[in-house]
Image 1 (cartoon, one colour):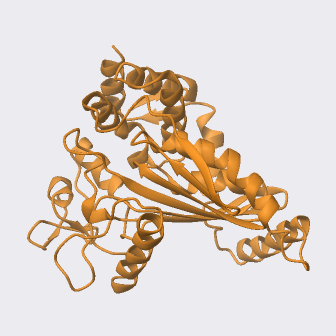
Image 2 (cartoon, rainbow, N blue to C red):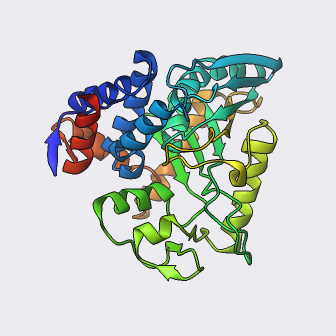
Amino acid sequence: MTIISPETLHAGIAAALEASSTSPENAQSVAAALTRAEIDGKKGHGLSRVPSYAGQAKSGKVKGFARPEMSLPKPGVLAIDAGHGFAYPAFDLMLEELPKITRDQGIAMAGVYRSHHYGVAGHHVEKAADQGMVALLFGNTPAAMAPWGGKTPLFGTNPIAFAAPIKDQPPLVIDLATSKVARGNIMAASQRGEDIPEGWALDADGNPTTDAKSALGGTMVPLGDAKGAALALMIEVLAAAITGAGFGYQATSFFDAEGDYPNVGQMMMMIDPSAMPMVSGDDFAARMADMAGLITDDGARLPGSGRMAKRQAAEHGIEVNDAAWQAALDLAG
């Protein structure tokens, strides 16, 4: 392992992408997201993604120079065409424009289509909560999970995330995949040549496996068994059917440079907590602080709270995998 500064990591990732048919603006957006993931310990969505992102930009599977375009088909609806480019610039646009609509309407939604891998879902809703909003985010991913009782992968691991502001504290952030673990964790283990715990995935024959490469060729185990598979189906409806994006079984891999565009979708629902007549934004944040206090006073951990300690520690450097960092430097030239 190597320890480097967040600035060095960001610059290295951006340089690798710029050298791989990606515009400087998009490279900066992607690098910011991957650096934040690495800082927060979400290694499967961080530096390990650089080779696959760069390979897809080089092959044209993701359009590295695409610029997201927005429209307002309804007063409370923001539609964003990611243009088969990276998802992060589309989310930058969403998080700039959707809060404005939400403050006016009380509640609003944004749909992103012709999209790509969007990384740590919790980071996007956290940015909404930083602006005083309550947010729910749904995204579908390439098929990796079978419906409960079935054998064919039809659904992605389809993350769901939620965030809400808390007075005088970082926002509450809840972020989970509908599989037992995010598939990116298995990809990262495969790159490191490490085994995975039993119970995360099945191989291509439907047998439990601890081999990361076999897991990538098989299916993920749903979170909560049938309940996780049902949630994954719900997210396919919200993120793909409503936005016009492709379903998980139609999407191509986020990891391989070959094939057509992934063409996945995401939906964010945003709520102004001052919209109801009995509650102001300050009242809401104060009540959230009361709830958070009860949780921590009971000896429990508030979901997502560990990220702040990791961010403080990162000020002294981030420990990154040597091989993954060297791969990024090699791409940057």
